[in-house]
Length: 362
Image (cartoon, rainbow, N blue to C red; front, side, top):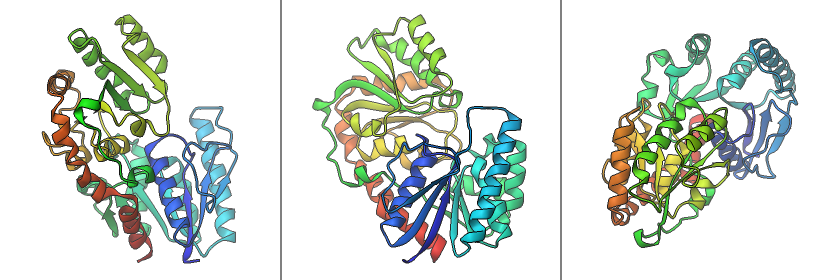
């Protein structure tokens, strides 16, 4: 074995951080590393984990919510990890997301185990206690990986000693190169992928689509994802009489892949880190529209007017205007698809995972 790596993340559910964790685990396991993934829950397994990876489940109860139960789970995670690191000290640790990052960093530091983490979302959106923890802990751990230069330069991280900017890796299916679909073969479909929560602003997308729907009676909107706003979004769809045009499709592992022949992909988020679905859409050559959110990831991926379009955050009129432009100019898809190679070349699995390996292992 080349080395040992333990990846800790709360669950293997449909989120972007979870996807990155699994892609990295599979890559390292297939390159000679002994890899363990530790999840705090009992049975989540959304992204397929390679058989070479050992999955360890803490088996904690997530049926109860609230501050007290979250605190109890955090303590139980810390105790579990303390025992784990006591038995397996010759290790490198990579942790994701605060709910697992905090107990992992504390436990690993007590045993002087190298620990790395990654900032995967807009750092301004976290609570004050989490931001304070990061300002104290990050300068004392082995390294932090950021997704954009803008996030790396954020004030909370000014004392970080070792850092790198590395994009998310594409899923392996995309790395098996796909030929972009021509404009004449695209379905009359607009789609988006994202958890059904306020920050994704699906409500704004639904309203923008409803305003243009009467002028394009054959176009549908598919929204992939699940979350706390499912019922309210469904109620909004019915209130706007869009039940036969807008569909909540639930969670699907390969939603972007299965919709690569759509007219366009739309991301209307208030904030993001580096959205995997947008990256995948661009790599497949799907015309894309995204808000120009704080982290700068959309601006780094999209050459406005060449492989997609940027619109201001929380400006549904601008979003509607760009959607109409693509609907009125379907031939532009053929020009946009030529840019797909740039995203594929810069973010393919092998290239990105190699950067992570070099950062953590030298």
